[in-house]
Image (cartoon, rainbow, N blue to C red):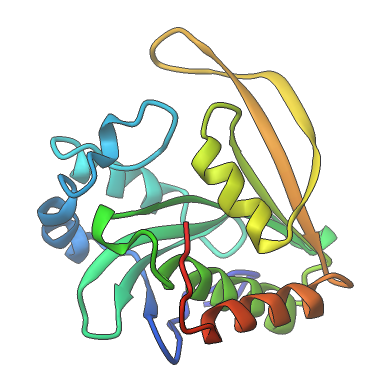
Length: 202
């Protein structure tokens, strides 16, 4: 398979391994979908316990080398604890977005998110040659916004009334980015945080 974001497995040293999403992951995702009330957070794209198969179908429909790639996130012991995606791929301009990220409650406040982002950002900048990586989140998803800011991403702006949601509300989308020239400092910060004995993550 050729293209910009071909399927690849990314392995960390302390916390996680990322593998491309497939339909074979449906039973595992369904088994953890109640951990942290994932699908009940109206401002996220996490799978609801009764809609896991549809969630996987939607993510796989957007999975091709010129459009995106979704990973499941496993602890190094093999336990599935979340997912994150490359999205909005713009290969000619060497840009993409990291989004649709969710973790089970038991994986939060650990090193899971930081090592996941270290792996995905490293692959985007060091292997794919990206010049910028974006993060987009709902204005009211303050937890996600804080986590993105802790990565070292800079605020680009807010897209007002950016999307119409299923409940009839309008989503104001907060846009952040990390540039290739900023990546070395962001990488050092992520490694430092992962090395800290008292590390806590969001």
